[in-house]
Image 1 (tube, each protein chain N blue to C red):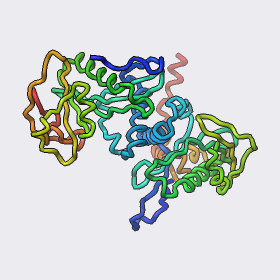
Image 2: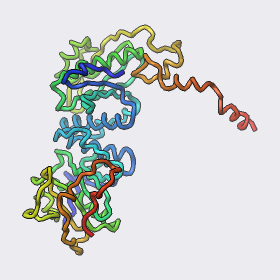
Image 3: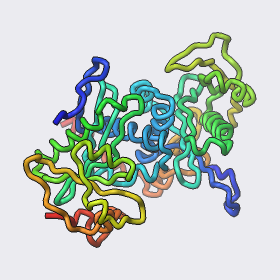
Image 4: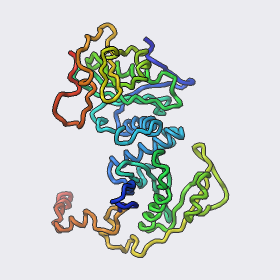
Length: 205
Length: 189
């Protein structure tokens, strides 16, 4: 699900967003976060790389093919938590933040999550409120030198979002491309030869 | 010669070679913070394809990675590059400690020359640590980019032979990893 937000024929930058799905894309994500959080905001390494990166989905935004922004999404029961959202300094004047958050909300909704949740830095509260987020409560908290509020937004889960009753092959698709056949659907052409069927017999002997 | 700082504010500073994926990630994070975050270098220039044929040295204060340098191995020399120290830890000779670790590493591998390419404004930093211009300043013809090639002997008792290679050859960039042609390492002994 690559989004073209600008016309290919124009000389405006081409912006694409996708779910990081290779180790190269993950490295790009980590490098961007290190640049912004460690380089600009002096966040210690062990606070930035907090151990949750390998249980999360990472979203990458590219400007003319160059990694420009990233966001981490973690999946809890009933809500998706958007976090670690950054835009590289040189791309900050392009108005990428709002469409990037929109894309993340859309991504979560298409996976079937009815709510998006985030910890917003105080300076960004107005932007989140304009995007349909509202404060969970009035108790601000702080970590890594910043004051935060907990925000939540209701998402419009589309009909046909994944459930245990979905077509099983739909659940095997790349998660940002649930609306089109994935590589495993192509593998169905090979049929079911059950190549390991003999293994149980061996084990029994 | 003093090999650099051993502690900052009472916390020990150590160096280590990257041996695991997590270690390399720490090296990359420090470089991203310094080169992409601070100096606005594009990602694709900073991560240029040479990271997986290189040795990465990382400096730690406690368990926090605060500096790194990359060493690439050529036939006749070891190339130190991408030297980075997190901004708030600069001025503590962490760079010196990293370069000394490079020197020891080169020594243990039987290499007798360290080589680097620096910006003209940075030559003083390297000269203070015993590096010299590969080509004397007066003879330098300069390349397309204002970069100065510098070298340092690995064993203080074995001075390097004078190098006759034209600077333009020495400064040649490797266009791709598997390209043919004169290798960038074709200088000296």
